[in-house]
Each structure stands twice: as structure tokens, then as C-alpha cells.
Image (cartoon, rainbow, N blue to C red; front, top):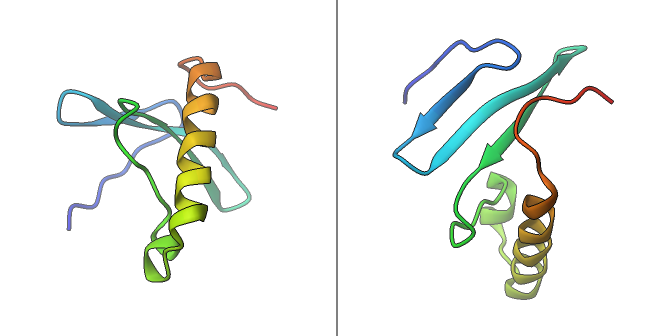
Length: 77
């Protein structure tokens, strides 16, 4: 396992197509922004413990729609 230290607005690249950026750090919580090709399925690890095919399909299609609205760079809300 590789452990990295990154601060807000800093990113790491995985291969040529995937970027993981620290979006926000607040009250001990970290939010990440993920940029990946649409054919890459991104799931939280707890969904892999008991996957439900219909739930995974719904969430992956929802994620693709959200990815189209995602603009690079951090935005505080």
C-alpha cells in the first residue's frame, strides 16, 4: 500500500486517465474529487462487501451524469 500526503487542491494521477484531487478538508473529514473515463466504475469499498447489481448500475449511471457537470478545480460550498 502506498501512503501519500496531499493538501487541499493537490492531486495524484493513476495511470494516464485517472486523477484523485483533495477537494476539501474540514473538521477531520476529507473530500476527494475523482476524474476518470466514463467506462471506469468507481465504488466505495463498502459496496463491494455486498454488491447489489441494480444498485451498482443505478449509482454508476448517476455518477456519469454527475461527472458531466463536474468542473475541474475545488469549489467551496
